[in-house]
Structures are given as structure tokens and as C-alpha cells.
Image (cartoon, rainbow, N blue to C red):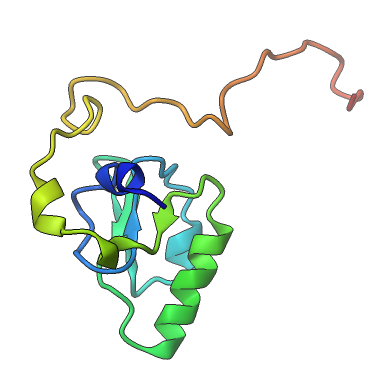
Length: 121
């Protein structure tokens, strides 16, 4: 990943190797796979790193969650950056509560085609 991705990390993340970016959809997959590492911020509608993995099992589960994330919102290069410098960076408008959360590019609403319920295509 890059410094650009790192600058998009959520402020709820604890400093360390793993972090979640603002691309999170709150799909619950990471919390299902590694519940001791990830938590949910219900107000913001996102998951974040509550605690960095401490055991081999937690590390394996966190990597599995990162690989399975549908919007690639989990990154593992947090130990390459200075958390104190970028922590004070300006947050996006939706994280400040000044705008609604942007839709995910993968799950953007598509035009609904009206057809009988028995037709699948």
C-alpha cells in the first residue's frame, strides 16, 4: 500500500502494523473471522483495529480477514509510517459528520430492472 492509503485510515485504529481504511463497508466479515482484533463503531458504521494481533492464531485470522475483505479496506503496512504525524491530518467530511458516507464503488446501486419475479435474467 502507500502513504495515500495510510492517510485514509480510520482514527479508531490502534497504532501498529494493521489498520482499516475509510473504504470499510461494515460487512462484519473481519469481526467474524478475528473478533479479538476487530471492533465495530456503530456510530460511524465501520470496523476498526481494536487490538493488534498478539498470537499466531490472531495474526493468521487477521491476515485471513485482510485477504477476504470485499473492498480491500484492511492494510498491513502500518509499521512503515509514523502514526503521530498523520494522526492530526484532516479527516474526510463524512468522518467529521459533515456529509453522508460515500457509497462503495463495488456495491454502488445499479438501475433496478422491473421484471416478473419468476425471471432471473
